[in-house]
Length: 253
Image 1 (cartoon, rainbow, N blue to C red):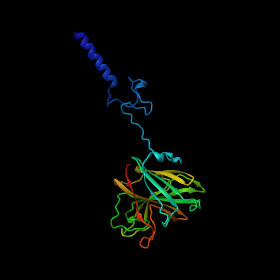
Image 2: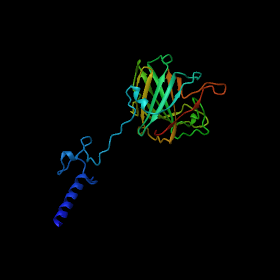
Image 3: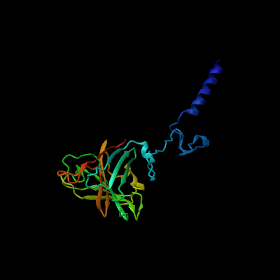
Image 4: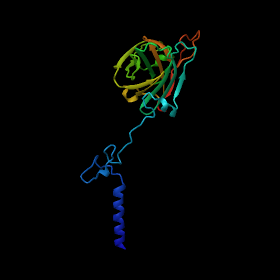
């Protein structure tokens, strides 16, 4: 009987050695390891292997994946001042800010170079801040500027990055400090028809710490003049620019 229990104990110990994760096990095959002990995907101990993050939005000019997420959105008011942008959708995940928009092809006619701006109010502070395209825009923190069309064709969005340097929060100035040049790789984009999508990699934006909800606005230009702004509202005697607050976006949705 003692011999039976001894054999049972040895068997149990052997099974544990095959199934338990060993935290101090070296990465990659060691002298006593077989190829089965190593993850084929990453070359590590399977106990250490982490799945690669896959974003729900792929920037490829095929917009079908947007139907699988629930973004925040804005549509153009027909009586707005700037109407070339008709639809805006924003979705965020752990790694990216994803943006989708549609534009009016009758208003975007000069396709030699079509600038597109993304404005971000990272801390969502608008108290005492001046208005321009959006109410409280003086609280803006970051600007991304790049083209979505160049030489009559869609191009990837690879913008320059700027931080706001306005002195008086009660007014809105075109006052920006260069942080990263165009082509730095902080974003990418693709378009088809009158639609475009882009993704901004959060960790690539130096100094950007998003509040749980942040503000975002976009514009599209012709000859460096804004012709489409979202979000927006109808112009009025007391609101000549048709300004509304920036779109309110959760940092992770």
